[in-house]
Amino acid sequence: MTSVRLEAYLSRLEQELQKQGIVDTRIVDEVREHLLDAVAAGLRRGLSGDAAEHEAFVRFGPPEMVAAGFSTERHRMLKRLVIVLSKIRELLRATSPHPAHYHDVRLSRYHFALRLKRPYRNRFGRRSVAEQKQIIAQMREHGEDVSGFETDSRERLVRFLEEFGRRTFGSIGILESLTLLEDTSDSTKRGGRYLAAFGGGSKMIWTVVLSADGGVSFDGTSAPA
Amino acid sequence: MNAEALKGHLDLLLLAAVQPGPTHGYAIAEILRVRSGGTFDLAEGTLYPALHRLERAGLLSSRWSEVNGRRRRVYQLTRKGQHALAKRHVEWHDFARAVHAVVEGPA
Image (cartoon, rainbow over all chains, first blue to last red; front, side, top):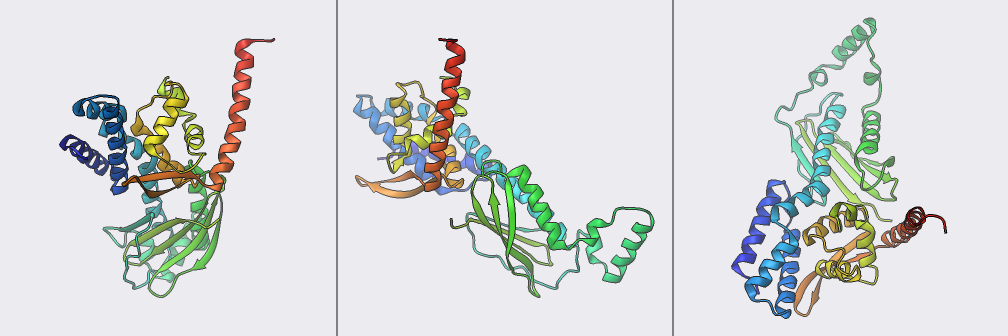
């Protein structure tokens, strides 16, 4: 049993969630079932249909508040992950680019795919190896810190993820270790599968795939216990 | 009860509410309200973001379940959730005992 007002409430909730960048039909389905339960309980207590619906909406809270709750709990983490993807791309593209084409991979719980508008934003990465060495030598002569160029790009990625994990994944705990499970780099892409272990005991498999034309894909799934 | 005061204990309350077995969101809200004698009568829409967060943290698992012809999303404790509940339970007892001792003064 659904009413026009109930569907209107759910429609507003869906819109508010979309404003927060959240598209998840499960949330709306769960809320629908909750409100139907609440209305039924009101009717059992002798309320009229209108009064039972009104009470259910009031007790649940306005759609804006509910959507904001999901946003603060979840979307904040997604925004941070999008930022880290951009950083990962910059780190890994410090080496010479591959003539590759990015192919999307399957969607999963924490999956992100980005295509940056300017594929060659990193001008240093576009230069030949000889030119890069020359620039580094000049920087060294000027007494500048060139340690970032002397570190392997994958090592820089691990360092970055470790540093990022310390600051970000509050609800899961601090990132305690990051282990390369599989190097998935080939002639068309650069990437790897990592086991990320958090202080709270959670473990995730992070799969990062980068292509030379600016495509970045991040896939995070819970690791089996 | 002040919503802010409840906020810090919401995870413990939710974990405790689903401890007996698979429970859907509306039933969880009812458990909190009834067991607390109406003290924990919070906006029910705030429960779901917290339930989803606990699920992402691996403390709860959920699935759709058919109950009396109605589809319900039911939540239950994972093994990790059981450990977390036990740990937080002890922490809460210690905290409550300490607060009580301070507020009530020496016997």
